[in-house]
Length: 243
Image 1 (tube, rainbow, N blue to C red):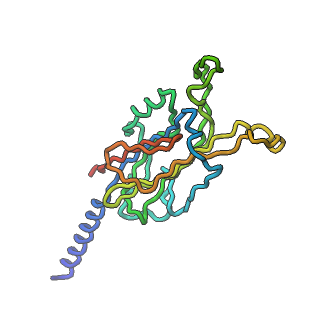
Image 2: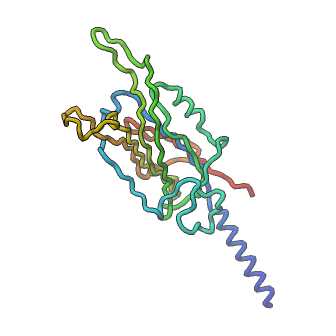
């Protein structure tokens, strides 16, 4: 075999290997809805922590639409690697609308992104952090009880901070890990809390946390995670890049 033939063979093998690698990379659309349960009993159903700090190792965390942490693997197409979904690519708009229409729930976050399937050792956690505004109190949100004052049917949504990490792992099956925290702002935040008399009735800080480790999921199916106060809908759909 002459040198030209050898060079041609090596080039063809390299192109073939690159093609196989590219074909083996699977991409997924991930869409989530985070919502709050406004049942007055929900905050009372668990002992919530006063403080939670999420672990954010820089090399394992990415914000959607932000640069990849470190060199992007050559087998990943940058166009499909942790990029936000367009509004017309969302599949859960109907579910989000129903939650918004409900007096007993409110949407905290509805978002989605496209990413490659990644094994446990290299999978990145998607990080988000947003401020949630308070809702205007609804005057009719009460019921009359004979012999008692009016009682609220649903809680008035509070302002607060929503922070979270969501990791999608591709092994034999898809798995999702989630760590979501909602930190409501204290009603006494505008007062001088150091000048207040400390009594048993003093409002204490609280954090509502939804944590799930390695939940197995099927693609194209709607999955639900929750605790008494926070719920999450998530759907993972295979994406086929155009050739």
